[in-house]
Image (cartoon, rainbow, N blue to C red; front, side, top):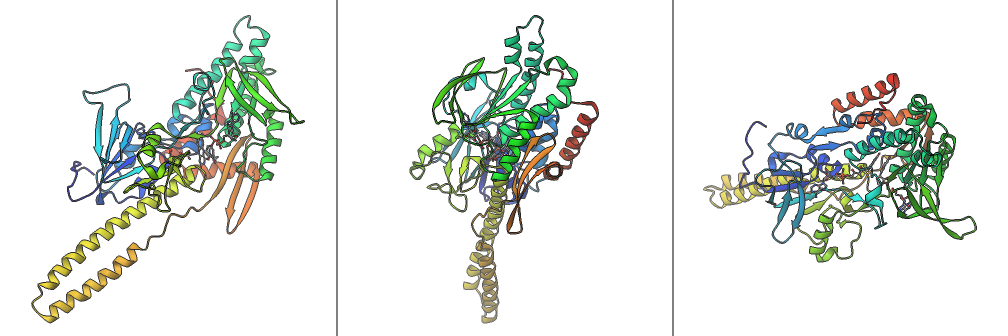
Length: 478
Ligand code: FAD
Ligand code: NAD
């Protein structure tokens, strides 16, 4: 690893975009000595997203779930180049990625190009807003570290502003109304964490907010958590009832202002009405949308003209209609949900594929060399010996080439729902187990601790949990 990065002319340049679940699991398993590997991402760390909702309340400190990419790369056998930059355009014809340093400090050069022989796109997705007016200006998303920090600050700002001297009653109610839009796992987990924060700490520290602090989860469909089994949806809904989190289903937000949302509500008789719901904090969690750099690439490849939600890929994760370009994770469209589990397995699959391709290349080169020497062999014995070696290599080649297409193995879905309870649909042998409750929660915690990438992260997260148990969450607003 100490050696300088000298792109070797006899190796292909493999450019990887992103440092998320897909890209990092590829990097972890890739034999980097076979390629000139270049990683480009605006984020110089990996983020363990499953625990991000816990950072919004300070239960877990955000740095505990970040892993510096430099730390991951320094453990690789051959040097990997990393550029902290955003890929602004992928030029398919020229086989070049345009990159731009969008951080605060810029040098003389902040825009340049990176050529590639092979490209893996793992840039994830951005937040869907469906073009609903006012969403971007007024709500918080929950995808990145700064989103969680932003929410943490705003929850406390709402509380302290509500406590301001002579605040009117209506305004206190509005400021303490925490509205979450989107009843997918992100929305559900955040609502649960927020209510825990209130129950465990806020109401003890600031008892005056007790009667007015409310959490409402707004969902357009008839129920929350559509990917979970019916039994677990019911369990989540009844737990939320106990926790006094209001679920507003069949309520589709159409407009957002700085103080209220406007939603179309489907009433029990099927009629529709528009309702204004005032809020202090609005968290928007309505799923994924395609990033502009991906949409632009889709426009350059005729075979992608019918894709809408992301890059269509084949069963080897090759971008349809493109050569030597692969896509993993949330920016690729497969038959699976856009989850960390899928992205991680896709990244690991590509590592295996690339390691095999490098081995295949090496054997093919040896074969070429052997057949050249065979033609120059001086005796029959020598020729036969070389022939045996050729047969052996050919066998090896057939074996290594036998890499099957990507197959996803679903380990189960797991979500925290507050009150030290979690729901889990776990694949077990050939069946499914649906479980909800405190044991599931303990399982949830240990599962995440064992999944956390480095032992450093594992220790930090465990300490954060203990710290919050002993001293409560920190309510100071940074
Ligand atoms: P990401 O992990 O989002 O990584 C994308 C990477 O690309 C980032 O490093 C980003 O900085 C970089 N990037 C962005 N734009 C560019 C660009 N233009 N050029 C170069 N790089 C770029 N899934 C589960 O399976 N279980 C869970 O419990 C779970 N919990 C979640 C909780 C939350 C709050 C959220 C938001 C998601 C959760 N998910 C969970 C979903 C999971 O995080 C995603 O499916 C997963 O992150 C997708 O991996 P990815 O590699 O495609 O993208
Ligand atoms: P999602 O797409 O799963 O859910 C978004 C929800 O928002 C949908 O139920 C949709 O009906 C609703 N919605 C959309 N527009 C609306 C509107 N205008 N008004 C009201 N409701 C509206 O999004 P997510 O929860 O962010 O999850 C994204 C992906 O990440 C999913 O694949 C999910 O499985 C994964 N994830 C998994 C976990 C976990 O496993 N614990 C946690 C978080 C995210």
